[in-house]
Amino acid sequence: MNLHEYQAKAQLARRGVPVPPAQVAGSPEEAMAAARVLGGSAWVVKAQVHAGGRGKAGGIRRCADIAQVGAAAQALLGRRLVTHQTGAHGLPVARVLVEMATGIARELYLAALVDRAAGRVAFMASTAGGMDVETLAAASPERLLLTRVEPSMGLLPWQARRLGYGLGLERAQVDALGAIMQGLYRLLLDADASLVEINPLVVTTDGGLLVLDAKVILDDNALYRHPELAALRDPAQSDPRELAAAGHQLNYIALGGDIGCMVNGAGLAMATMDLVQVHGGAPANFLDVGGGTNAERVAEALKLILSDGRVRAVLVNIFGGIVRCDLIAEGILAAARELGLDLPLVVRLEGTRAAEGLAVLADSGLSLVTASSLAEAARLAVAAAREPV
Image (cartoon, rainbow, N blue to C red; front, side):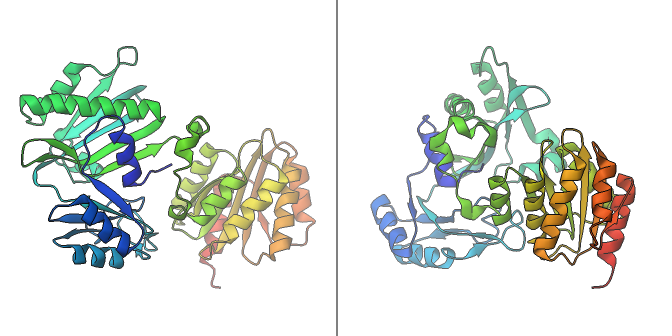
């Protein structure tokens, strides 16, 4: 689960991390009132969406007077902001953050994240603040500084000094960086976060360190322990289909292709999408109905796939380990009849009562194709999607 910038900064501020004075606004009038309360002579108005690249997309605007603050808020609120991370449809802007402008001498990058391969919390830092870390890692990996935290000892002072001097900071700034890193570490552990990212962390013109932008990603599986954080979820920032899927205990992620995929098991789902691409197709979604799925959940999953207007063919790949394939087949048919399915449907069933499930499909009278292998199923689905409408 993602937090908005203003929510992430509030969490950091509670742990002693320095952030600029700011207020959230939901209208141009509120934005202008916020600027007056903050004082100063310059402000920055920031669109609050769960995506990076806001500056390049016009979602961050510097204002020199109160009227400009109102105009910037008017231009952003109620619109959909399109960045390189949102896709062409963009994300809705319901709030802006009005922040006092900061004099910037340098921009740095700092993040605390769960390094699953190492089984440690890792800190990454770079002098290339403001740059996408993925781009930086690919183009200039030598500019990324890394230190990992031993769980039994926690973050140690020498680790902050190592990163601080590696960033070219002065002694007092290195001490300030250590305090900031401790705040990030506490937030990561307290909130069961997988990432706490500051980009940029700026050296101000008076030599201080300040968090100019922040991103926090929480582990969805741990939210039951943090109801106060779960309450910060913004449903408007999520794909409606993904929200509907969560309500039926389905793992769904919308993608950009035209072949709808329904699979039980995340690993099998990834393999299915890979084979679709190997045969020249593009999956429309990742959809894992779970190893212990049932007919009702399969029916809801098929409805979810068909709600995507880009889908031209559907591929169902079910391995019956715990589940019975005949019951899955009945769920597929129930949904297909209810929705009046008129798209090509390719089904591969394997495992418990697979023969009975295939017999149910064969006797249905519906126009569908069964496949004996995953490779064949992927090939048939790609071929069906290419057929003229």
